Picture (cartoon, rainbow, N blue to C red):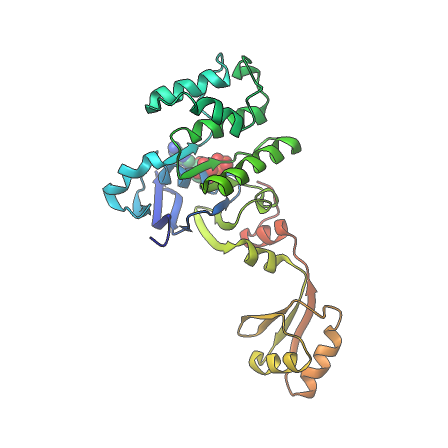
Length: 304
Ligand code: ATP
């Protein structure tokens, strides 16, 4: 099984509107997959389909190696926190977890205290959930998603509306569960900066379409400071760069090279290229912030 989850041209239509359109994403065991998109991009709809809470209009997906109808037999291996966690506001975290355990047939009495500890709610005592901070509610939501020891946990905007401390707590909880229990996560957000601190892989969704999938390394490389060189002959330009002792570069397309070292030597690079009869069509230092990269890709100004 190459992918723990892969979707194949998933489409979900509401009336005449495609909330999700031809989405093919790929998630491996152990990934923390960040699904990034603005409000209304289709994140929740996609996560609902993956979790078996909504049926696609077209397309299919494979889950833990199962496809078609068979995959619904392994849905119990997914834990979800989509939209508001379904909680009983007048009960404590412990009572909420006990009720979920009963509903899911989990009899081991150790599970609830363990889960409370995992998400840092062991001190919440008898406090009713309606009096919880947003961060505590989100952590309870994650604990509820963890009942039944899922292999894949789907979290829809788990950091939305949290204060910085709450964000750190959620992030640490997710990272710990990923490392210690090898749980794979899909986390949606409309803030790339937040996801970038935790996600190992990204899918960028806009107007229902998946624009790009990339690894953390690829994203950082795209956003890190570099020289962007436009030239009429990339092959020959690479030879010139090598001769200059420049080895950290990447040919991006037929006339663009990104150079990640010697950032202040743009002038010298252009001269050497000219000496070797390679035309420089443009040369500039780029340093795209994560958020700018995402906004450029989705063609917007950041207003949702
Ligand atoms: P948000 O963070 O605002 O929830 P999102 O990226 O999760 O955004 P979705 O909730 O998946 O986006 O919505 C995608 C599109 O589908 C939106 O235009 C939304 O209005 C529409 N949509 C979602 N659910 C329904 C539904 N049940 N009936 C009709 N349209 C829907």
